[in-house]
Image (cartoon, helix red, strand yellow):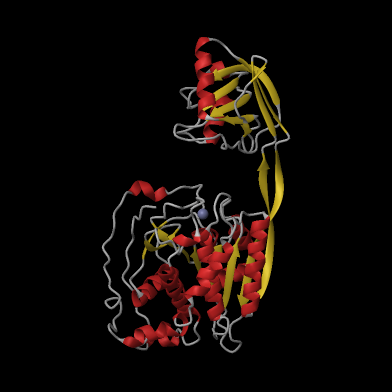
Length: 457
Ligand SMILES: [Zn+2]
């Protein structure tokens, strides 16, 4: 789960919809044991210990995109898919890390003793001028006084882009920004394309000290950024494919996906070794099951860097593949003991084939699954290509989200089992060769009544 575009829906507040359906009520053939029998071919084969053991293995170290940790995970995942009998491909793609280089700030010719770090995409340049404090750099706060000067800015309220744009418009030649209230360190900040300016970040304490000194007298500063640069790295998607039964091929493609990369400061047991483990387990049990649909199991790299792997994968799909793709199931953070209930998120907050089938499978297996609106994971590029897709996740998130505490001991086997059953049954409902003919028979799964949920994260 990627953090950057944080929670649009949070402002909508908490409106928990009542669970309007029990497992039995969801089906017109209520209490009919054959209802469950529809799914048994898949769900009886799920072995939760396989998933748990794979999470244990994958979460031994962080799996940051472009690092050895990711590459080891990728090799392991590829080997597993191959062992199950899949045609498996490593799909490399280039991503860019920021090397902040060397930055310095000197005040009145003396060395500034605080820590400096260049903004992402800062210009490499040295400028000497007066320091001008412009508060949060809103349009009201930035005047012509900043022309030809180095703007001292407080982080917060406005985006980096807006703040830098506001001072650039008035002719500033450098940016020194200190951290927002309650934020520690100075690892933040981005300069955007076309904003050609040297920019550095300071801790809040160092910034406030400069603000105080400016109240008494003018300060001449030299701001210098050197050797800051983009460094090309390689991340990977792992793609496993299974052709349908040759006599039954209906031309359709169903994808199940998870992201194998983690954030740098945590082992990512739930985020998203859990989704990878569930994807592997579903691949294992469906490997030898005849289907009329092509199945693809994909683990994505660089999700935490902004869905880079899934965008790359989606961009490699031909028009025909996009046309034939009927469903994408994304599994992200599906095993935490400390998170809320299962929910299906779509980027537009609308139901689609995936949520319809997922809600119905949930109703048969445990309880109906509600849906909500959220992007922030690898279902987004599929959605943008017009492929029905949903993110299966537990919300609210666990407190260990993106922290070093996202470890194996927080994983619930019950939750893993439940999600694997629901997604496995859903995939198989589409892919089993006896559908859609079975749809009219009395053992066919019935649609479930499921609700939109303004679920807090
Ligand atoms: Zn995440």
